[in-house]
Image (cartoon, rainbow, N blue to C red):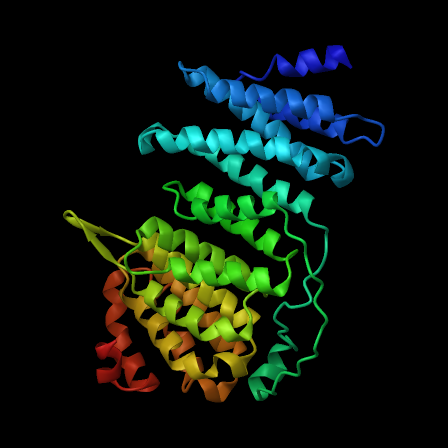
Length: 380
């Protein structure tokens, strides 16, 4: 055991793929039923805290941190929850130490890979702390048969479920705070990991705490926040929608924010930013069509289709145009026929090839005459 530990530890500062393989191998070894992990977790946490508190924090420290954090992230993914739970407080102490040091750094001095590992590990600490369960308060989509949805939109039948009270520990609350703050990080990979971890954690919470997180995400979609915050919040909202974690009461507020996100564009110097926000908003629209019953989004169909139609034809980024076209196609395909007039004509006109070039956006003139009126489309 000592030889294996020394062999794997020797690769901690290695920048090649051997670091990833070595840490995964050691985590897999410690996931055995007869292994004792307290000593190794404690040594890695102490190593992390000592490295970040060094006055001469350098590139070597980054490599050492990446090795220890990768090991802990792998261990918390495949290890036994009953053995890992007693070490949660110590692991989060190491996470908090890294976050505290990085908060003092200039934005250009932060390492996005380390921040991604910290976000991933924090989410897995909360998953170990919470008992695995399927939230009974999740939105019930009902039938997903496309043919049935296109013929008629039957009202959804709700069945009251008794929700189990979850005793949230201080560690879980701190992790949720870390993940919510990470939604505003400057690195896309950090924001996306935070969004995924928030969705996984919320699935194990009770209705009150789960809805509170969803409300906090929606509040982040404020005009005064940066495009990074908008992108992170949109990614988290899409993850919540994909997992059916947005309850009926929050649908109107969520859709209004999404429509605003589809038109998000902020001037910066000689150019503008916001293409990542519009792309994430298209993803939310795609998940809404798949996740919500047609009756619950019927009052907003006109606004959603118009916003997606304009984005797919007029957005200057081809990635946003194609994302909006995919979301538009998903909405047309899953909503009843009478929800979107001339839906098939619109779907045939706005396709993958026709929106490849921005010059083809003039075709929206003909589509607008079919959909509503040209003036209504231009007024948007």
